[in-house]
Length: 305
Ligand SMILES: Nc1nc2c(ncn2[C@@H]2O[C@H](COP(=O)(O)OP(=O)(O)OP(=O)(O)O)[C@@H](O)[C@H]2O)c(=O)[nH]1
Ligand SMILES: [Mg+2]
Image (cartoon, rainbow, N blue to C red; front, side, top):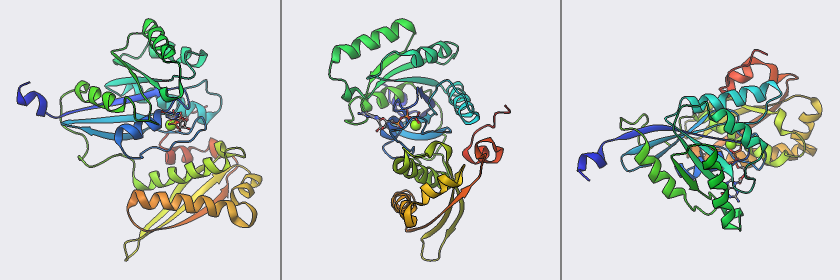
């Protein structure tokens, strides 16, 4: 290959879409090689677009993590699903992620139907292949999906074992268009640290209280001060909808919030590479999921109805 062809910079936007819990955020983190998006075992973890930046040779791959696509009911659901599709519409390439264990179910069918109207080139990614023991099943699923829709390529990946991740990154690096990088080479995400910090706390909250509440809570960073010794003093507010939920978040004698705070602080410290003093406040805001201000904070468009 002539030298210019391999060294000319390339840069492109690659959207990852799929049903809730398909493994989108986990795959973005694996491709980037750093945690830029939060992950939980719960559906509807990701709420707004998160961009993770992967570098491979002369290529910068900007991965757009999107909220899962499902039949929305509530206002927040609608905002999330609209955002997911807008992520696809703005990308150079769209990757459809399908949890290999689940296969082609009505939820995926509905996504395929809408995806047909998206004009960008498509790539199929079967995720969590480590969890599928019968390999012929994977091939069958890939063949079936390829019969249903044209994909430029099909990948079978496991973020858990790392299988298929390097191949996918290399392929994307070749495939994104030639052009200057959009971000500095060492940047892994476009999210400001204050939103990453809020997301980390939301992840810990969700992991800790998944049975009791989390969908109706949201976290905002309200203050961030760098102290003379280089440490950060961060205040965050957790919004819940009822007094009973506030009590759950606090826990007996404040035990629960303390545990959440400790886990979040540790991870925020890693992200900002500095000592962190984290102060969490829990506020009851009855209809926060109908409040436009909360959507702005999350980076979501507020659905009018
Ligand atoms: N076994 C296995 N589990 C995985 C793999 N990738 C993701 N998971 C798990 O699947 C669950 C969902 O992962 P996420 O990355 O949060 O999924 P998502 O598609 O971003 O979900 P939403 O943001 O809710 O739409 C988590 O419990 C992950 O640990 C994988 O390669 N193998
Ligand atoms: Mg996600």
